[in-house]
Length: 95
Image (tube, rainbow, N blue to C red):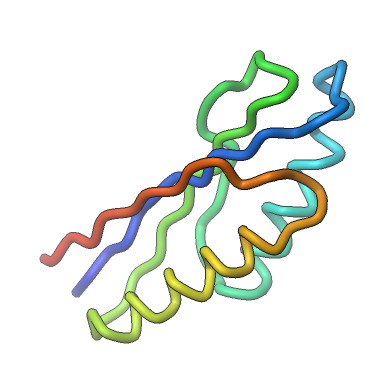
């Protein structure tokens, strides 16, 4: 069994409240959850208006399939018009 977990770090321009931030982050989280059946949440920088850190994890029995899904997830994350992806990282663990 293989587990991929990672973080997507976004910069949200022209955001001046946590309510505005939430309106940008929720659609990104929903899209990733629906597209990849991944566990996703806002994991860091919860009190900063213009930075969002979104954590994700996925499980598979094939490492190559998992690598492919993570690559597609990063492509989707980068194409978001709601915020600018400024950093991303992930690790794959085997059990």
